[in-house]
Length: 300
Ligand code: CAA
Image (cartoon, rainbow, N blue to C red; front, top):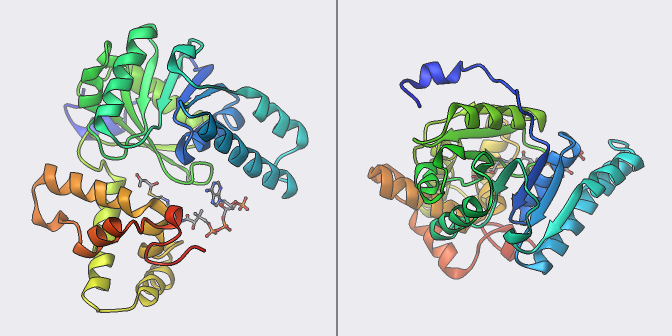
């Protein structure tokens, strides 16, 4: 598909068959954010699927809180809130999926889990259904190879928090068709996002740049060069980052940061991507950041 990344980046975006029904698999933070933006900004009917009913319940409660906050701030009317909520239905099994035009997978970053899911989804859905993965580090080409119709598989990498961040990285695998790419870019734009195009390489664009930066911040802490507060304050006030690197790592999840650094290190083979020892120790201790109540900072 990509003879040259230069020509790919100026590819014309067409939307000749707009997506109407979206299915989001995985009701974690990313999946819920994607479902909300799809229902609200793109006015799509969305089916949110998760095998855990408790996770679905938590996801819908989170979604309600986000919408209620926007109503309270005057950013959304009661009618819009009701409309968005009504557009989102749920299911606990992918066999209950109601023939969507487009599926976005947002399950945990486990290559086996993703490949199995893509194999199952492509077995039961028509070949033209586009299957996008929100993976941040797994090869799109390898996920596509597990599906029955690899040309319909693509990477669609949203950033956290999805409702706030304006970017979606789009990553075609080796097998992805032009039609799949154009439809994905058009969908992301309807969701109010700007897209960038990356080749299917470890970390794509965002994490190839972001994770070594975070890892280096952990290295600076580990070497005793500065306190955690001074590292974050330097980058926040000195370079206008919305969060310092250690706070951002806590927000992303230290296990996720470590997993992405490991992929960069193993697959690119350069020692400059070696995960910081302190990052590994924190993960070993179960200090994973905001989600566990403790990371580089405390979250009581
Ligand atoms: N979901 C939805 N909305 C959220 C949110 C969430 N989890 N967290 C915050 N927001 C909203 C708030 O409600 C608020 O909205 P309003 O302006 O409408 O009130 C807005 O974001 C700003 O929030 P706050 O005022 O509470 O706090 P803030 O100004 O510090 O902003 C932030 C919070 C948007 C998260 C900001 O700190 C930021 O941009 N941080 C960097 C985030 C980032 O880099 N994300 C990328 C991570 S990497 C990734 O996702 C890829 C990967 O593969 C690992």
